[in-house]
Image 1 (cartoon, rainbow, N blue to C red):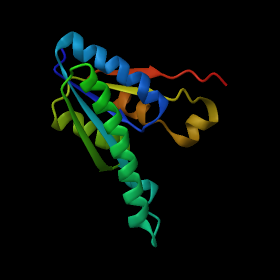
Image 2 (tube, one colour):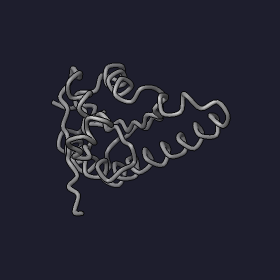
Image 3 (tube, rainbow, N blue to C red):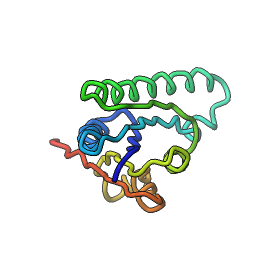
Length: 144
């Protein structure tokens, strides 16, 4: 059923729980994992001076985030591919899933609601609404 599982990451705890689910699915189905971090081009587009420094820092953050997924997958004997790309987060995730012929997207959600969700938007929600493949969302519960 699943051969290629896409795990988009932002390096947060929400991703940690999603990685657990993705690795478990990959083991059950003999699938590989694709770890993806998207440097959101809109987040720094308005910067003139220092944009290259910000971009480099975000790319380093992305490398660390995908490396975390690589380590988790390899620890369980799951094949894994890592990628750091630049673009609009939700669209880059959808494009990657299509280009790599992924069968399912497993991603975390921060569980925002109300005004925060309205103002910040939700990458996960946009992926769920637009994806041509199933999307498994894993919610992180805040204790505080």
